[in-house]
Image (tube, rainbow, N blue to C red; front, side):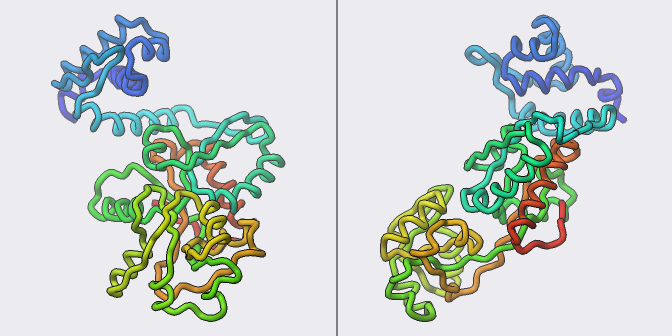
Length: 321
C-alpha cells in the first residue's frame, strides 16, 4: 500500500463521486447533506492528494479533467461494492415500488414485455418499467438504465478481449435467448413463390433496420465476404416500421424470426431462409458492473429470463462475464 493511499481520507471519494454525478458543487452538497464550503474543501484535499485539478469551473457547474473522467468509473465501482458488502440490499418484490429502466429494440420488447407484465402483476404490482430504444452503453454508463437487452456483438467481443488480457471491464452480461435472422417479404411478393436464391436476393430492393442510421449492416458484411452486395433503398430504426413498409411494398428486409409472430402482420407477410450464412443471434442482458450485486437487479434479470422462457425463445444456460 502506497503512502499516498494510506493517508487518503476515503470520504473524499464519496464527495468526488457526488460532484461528478451532479456536475455542481451546490447540488452535490445538497445530495450529501453537507455545506458547499465543506464540499469545496474536500475537493481541495483530493486535488492535493492526487496532484490533479480534477474539476474546473464551467458556466454554472464544473467540468472534469481527463484524469477525473478516467478515475470516476473506478471510484463508482469501488463505492458500490463497499456499500453492498457493508449493507446488503434486501428486495421484496411484493412490497417494492421500484421503477426500472430497460433499453431494448421494439422486436425484443414485443417478445418479452407481455410476459414481464404478467410476472410483475403477480409478484410486484407496484413496480413499474420504462423502455428506452436508445444507445444502451451510454444509458448504462450514465446509470440512466438498469438493463439493456439485445444483440451486442461488439460489446461482448470487447469484454472477451479484456478478460483475456486481465483488463478491467465495465459491463457484465447474461444470455437471454438465441435467435436467427430471416428474410421477410409481403405474402404475394414475386419471390415468395419458391426458395430464395442469392442472385434473386442481391437483385431485389431492400429495407435495412439500423439503430445507428448507418446504411450498412452485418448482412452487408456477410455479402461482401462473398463478393456480393445488395441495394438498400430505405433505412429505418424500428422493426415494426420495417414490417409495415415491407407488407405494403416490394422491398425485402432481414428481421429476427421471433419477431414474425408478434408483428400482427402474419396474414400479409411471409419469411424465407436467407440464401447466405449469418451467425446465430445471441440476445443478451447487459448491465454495468456497478449494478451487478443489487438484490433488485438480480430479481429484474430473473424476470427477464422467465419472460424469455415463457415466450419459448431458444435459450442457453445463463452465462455471465
